[in-house]
Image 1 (cartoon, one colour):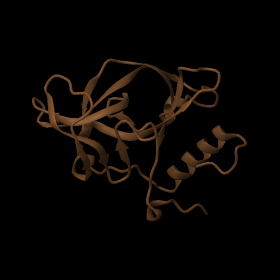
Image 2 (cartoon, helix red, strand yellow):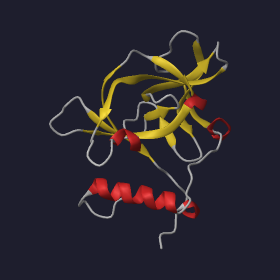
Image 3 (tube, one colour):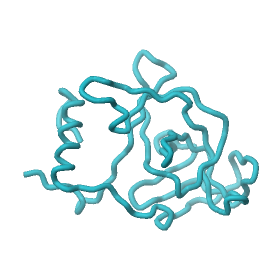
Image 4 (tube, helix red, strand yellow):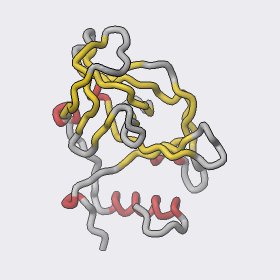
Length: 172
């Protein structure tokens, strides 16, 4: 998304503007139909109304999530929760697969100059909740976390964009 380390915010804003002006739209695919479950296991937490089968990873068309893998265990839900995934299991009452995880209780803007970082889906997050569940079909995107320097327990959460070569906008 960025060409150089110089002026990253301005570059991100320009890339978003370019994408919109080139009629690049977000994927409107039904993620529920595109999910592949990998690596059956019997470890990890379960909560009320969840049971086997348990899986270690989920593969969507555009991204993969892996429980207990610090680089691949974060996602956002359609209601805006940023979730750290600990397990993937079946929910008896909902009758669907769910991710078991903890959501960040505090979400703030990382930056406010030019625009609010939340408008780009970028947040400063900290303080995890108790273990809860989210239906797999409520997963919206993969999230990448970076520790904020000089703030040991706070992280910058960025949505990850994965697109195929044929979906890349042509910049003229």
